[in-house]
Length: 157
Ligand SMILES: [Fe+2]
Ligand SMILES: [Fe+2]
Image 1 (cartoon, rainbow, N blue to C red):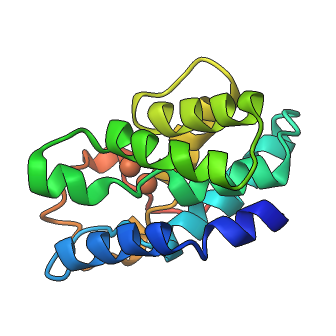
Image 2 (cartoon, helix red, strand yellow):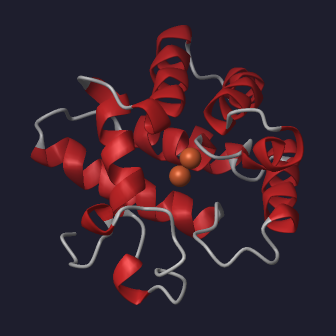
């Protein structure tokens, strides 16, 4: 987990999170911060083990902590945030010595967290991202655009 722990201390990485925070200051709905990333990482790791995928923990955590780093670009410029996050993540993955195969898996996971996938990291990133939201404890659930049947009213993990 060494590369992951170094990457999340990176100055550029911190800057992206600060930009997300600034854009979400008055947001009443789910935020895209480190708490969300940690929730997604842990869910994704559990689901990976349960599904028999056994994707390395560092790959899962790195993908989860990068998957929404470009959310601020969606607020500011309407760029789909999975694409923005993917672009911002690439140089960070290179800087912290993820090899090309690892980069590909992580970047696909980021892109597919919003689109879903038939298999692999993208499939469980999509699922974990949705499951991470605490609708059962949300004060804005009546205004949220999620259909009632998709809201997480029970704790599964
Ligand atoms: Fe997202
Ligand atoms: Fe997310």
